[in-house]
Image: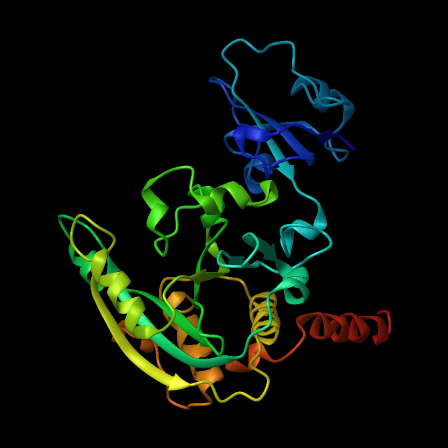
Length: 341
């Protein structure tokens, strides 16, 4: 096995990556064989690992290597390396705390605290959720295009029994917070890099974002209730600011029996662990927010904000309740119980 142990392209989270494949782009007049075309190697020649099904003579003619290294004929060559992270990187930012969910507790009495994954469940400050709200807005754009006018971001605002702060809960692109240098719309210092959030962000979370996967973000914000949060949004509403057309479409008391902060953290980890895929129409910030506020309030019929997102929406509030690992365990047991063919 060959491991890249440095920092790739300046991303602190891209380290300790295993080399899977090394390829060279074809140069005219090289042509792909029918087998290579069928295997997806039309424009690229695999250099390493060598294809064991190819005759030795053929492997030498296409310069396949027994060990990954730079080929001798590198003039005018373009090389491509395929790397992969450890197995746990598919379910979390570290091996000991799975779950693409984080909580930024910016208003603790001693100092801010940042935690993520399953470890977050045991570290968050204890409080009881009292009210939950659904809020939606467009992003500020000076010259809005038709798609911009249809694109709304939704979030949930949670109020707590201590009345010292509220919490914004939203879903967005996986690794987006680290990729965008900790610039969150919910804090005054967003346009003053480096932000306080970025300074406390663990290096393993600073990665290129993935638009087909999601993370769940929780921020404790100074606004203590909905009215104060409305004032905050109003301050940053305008074509050259942050928000456009803020809407406050759902408010209700939180009626779930177990609604402490640690309980909410567990629900979010459960939800995200079962399915962290992201889609503009089927699974996005609006569908997540509808699931969450309806779940905490115990209300049926809560739907995404925009009619376009309601077309294929299916409520998935049940995902908050169950340990995803148990479902995977059952699948493994079923496979093991099957008789070999």
